Length: 130
Image 1: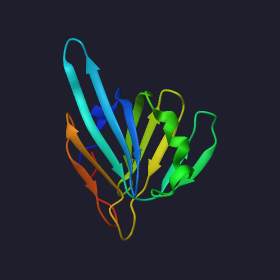
Image 2 (image 1 turned 45 degrees about the vertical axis):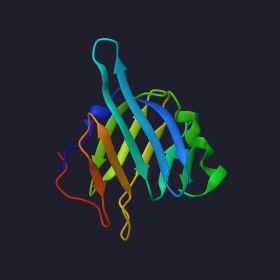
Image 3 (image 1 turned 90 degrees about the vertical axis):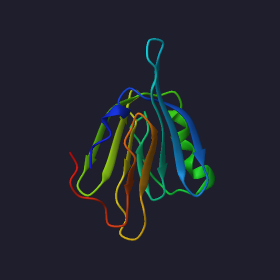
Image 4 (image 1 turned 180 degrees about the vertical axis):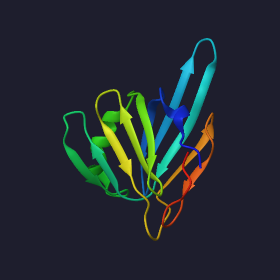
């Protein structure tokens, strides 16, 4: 699977919480319009480092405990990595980091939309990241 490098430069335009954590990611220029308009949906545990450098272990569906992720609103993605069997690592321009690893039993994260290839990291993760 291909690492979703088109996400570099995207801003977090919306956050949504229910039994998943969702980030609407967009990259827009006056010359090109929307280069990327995608949604990242996370269904399993998240390791999140906020701009102050504090780490949080977050679980989708946990209500107000997910509040640290709200600080990603209008922040830009500066780096994207996918490690091991599908561990997603996003870095942001305020110093925050979001990490989602594969889960042995459930889909952990899903990316879809315009300007990115659709990705679903299923139970146990995925091989062959390039």
